[in-house]
Image 1: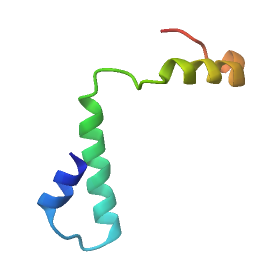
Image 2: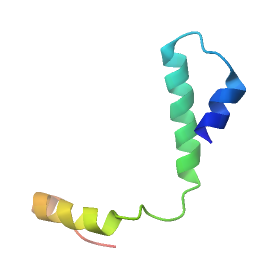
Image 3: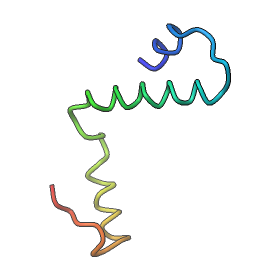
Image 4: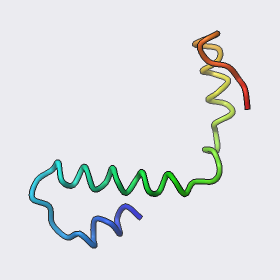
Length: 59
């Protein structure tokens, strides 16, 4: 979807314009996500070990 957004726009006046468009496209894509990342449970466990009371394992 990001590639489609960039292709439809064509060219950009500078790098900041391209960065902003990609950022907005990713925000739109992220809003449509329904499931957590595949390895989120393992990552949550590691974060809880590393950060203790600052990170809990609540689902």
